[in-house]
Length: 430
RNA sequence: GCCGCCGUAGCUUAGUUGGCUGGAGCGCCCGGCUGUUAACCGGGAGGUCGCAGGUUCGAAUCCUGCCGGCGGCGCCA
Image 1 (cartoon, rainbow, N blue to C red):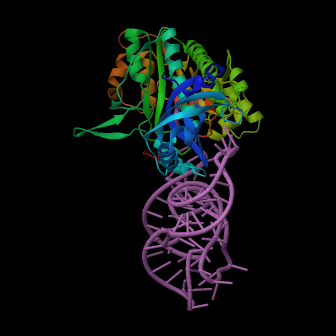
Image 2 (image 1 turned 90 degrees about the vertical axis):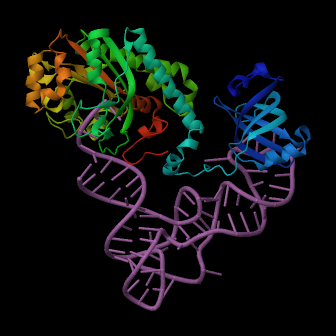
Image 3 (image 1 turned 180 degrees about the vertical axis):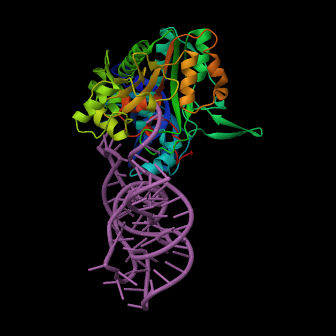
């Protein structure tokens, strides 16, 4: 029977013979006994290999090979309080599949060394736990959207124009011309709502910002949605439900992994609807009241965000930013056109911004005048402008930084731990 | 773009008011061990102290340049 370690760590298997495949996680020899701690994708189990049971040749081979050798074995399960996961295999057969000698990673490894050897470090129990949580976050994102009437769609990675500013695009040669790597699918999603009404996409976005912080990647996973007929508050409602859905999915399905990472799960369990909505103006007052040096009109810096969000246990929406510090496409508030109908979602515990979103300008003349204010040429955005000419509708959308969300949920100290192969300003390998 | 820091064995590092042969832990090689928990015990190999130049009787240590790397800010998801 093809079993995983997780399956056989159970009283149901006591006395039963099992066949397991995996990698050597730890190995200790005591004369004529070798303790092999075997690892697979699910867990670890200690296996006792005695010379008299497997023969001197196999025993010697096993003694020679190092950690991370792959092997299959057969043996009986026994309850054993001295074993790391409570059960032990009395091995009757071992077959080494792929030997490993001098595995580069052992104790006392620097962060930098582990990043250089990420292709090997992904095998660690810590990365294994994080990657499982990450997989569940992606699952939950897709589940949420599909359960709520959104169509999944795709936008191009090669683009010719910017969504946000111009300075943050990666330029790539494109058959003698220039193209850029996308920094957001937003404008494409806006075109697609006129066909599908509610759309989402999960894809990488690229930012050439020379950001050197624990929260920035040059290539990050972006979950973006756009919905026709939605106003700012409608979008916030969906986002709130989505975040709660994702958190619940991870808490339900990844308990073991969260515990392994020593995440305080009670903090995640406290995350329920509704999230507080706070106008930018109020947030500035709140920030000032706790001693942050900030004034109306300033964007929130990392220190301010940290000072503010460490005081919250749940995410908080910040709305109605001054239009001057937000991109041109946000719809000005009809009741106060100096602010826009936008929202950022700040994660608690100091993690900060994970979502940026808002209601888009849907009237042609408003869009053109905002573009003029920002010094943008409408010809460069002809297809975006067209959307306001042919049956425009109110609509809203958002972008979620999935890696940042994972960082918060898993309680990680740096975004580079949240993704298998982080790309930062200073790293493109392995 | 701005500020700060670091390069010593395969890895993690001690040693920097200039001074004996640059130490240690892990890993590796040889040997031992029937209950180990990143096992332990005995022995061993392994260093152009990032590179180049300078100061000095003497440089891992001081100076200059170069190369490589790291942390943080700004900006954003």
